[in-house]
Image (tube, rainbow, N blue to C red; front, side, top):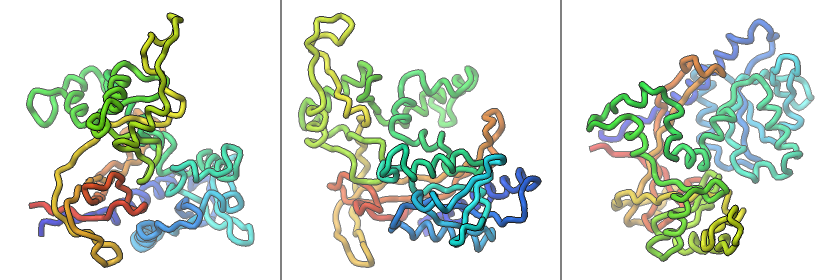
Length: 354
C-alpha cells in the first residue's frame, strides 16, 4: 500500500509491439515469408543486461515477437539491407537471412566509446546502415539528438519554445491556474542551462563568471558533457578548475573581437553545458547492494517517467501511439555528486505515496 504499480515492463514492450505491427501492415505487400524480429543493439561485452532481458522476455511472452541482440561490431557481418526496399535483415551463423528487422532498439550508440574507430569505422557504418533502413528506430536520430544536453539548453533560451506552438496555443492559460500561460508554466520547470560554445550569450557568460567566482558560486552549478550515465560531470572545485583552465581574457583592440576584459571560451568547453544544480529534499535511507547493506544516512532521489511515442515522418499527423509507460526512481547518498545506477553511484528505489 502506498507503492504505485510500475507498468514499465508491460507498456514499453507494448509500444514496441505497436511499432512492429505498424511496420508489418505497411510493408507486408512487398515482404516475403521471412519471419520478423526486433533488433536490440547492445554494447560489446554488455553487463547491464537484466532489464534488457526482461523486455525481451515480455516481447515473446505477450506478443510472440523474437528479439535478436547484436553489437555494432557484430552488425558489420550480421546485418544486410535491401537497397531497393530498405528492408533490414539479420543473418545467421551460416550467412543466410534469418529475420527481417521491424524495430531497431538502441541500447548502445550514446557514447563516443561505442564508435572506437571513428566515422569510417565498422561501428559507425553499422549505425548508418540501420538509419538508412526502413525499420523503425527507437530512438530515431531526431529523438536521440533531442535528448542531448545541448538541445535542452537551446530549448531553454528565450523565445525558442514558442517556435513549436501556434499563436493561439501560446496564449492559452495553463491547466494549473494562477493566470500563467502555458509557455510560462513550462519554463517554470526548466533548470538554468547555459552554453559554453561559440553561441554563448551575455546570460551564459554571466553564469560562467558566477560559477568560477568562489566556492559558493561553483556549488550552484554542474558542468555536463553530451554523455549519458554517471561519472562525466564536474562539480565544485573541479568545475571551477575545468572552466578556468579553458578560458582567457580578451585584450584585443580589434573592434570586431571581444571587448577588453571579456571572457574568451576555449574550444574544449564547447562540448559542455553549464547547468543550475538542483537540491532535492533529503531523507534518511538504508541502501542495499547485492542484498547487503551498503550504508545508511541522508539520501536524495531523482524520479524519471518513461513515455512511449510512435510518430510517422509526417509531423502534421497525430501520433500513432503516445502514453505514459512507467517510472524509474534512483536514490543515492546526499554527499555523492554523480547519479548513475549502472556506474555504481546510485541505487534503484521505489516511491512511497502517503
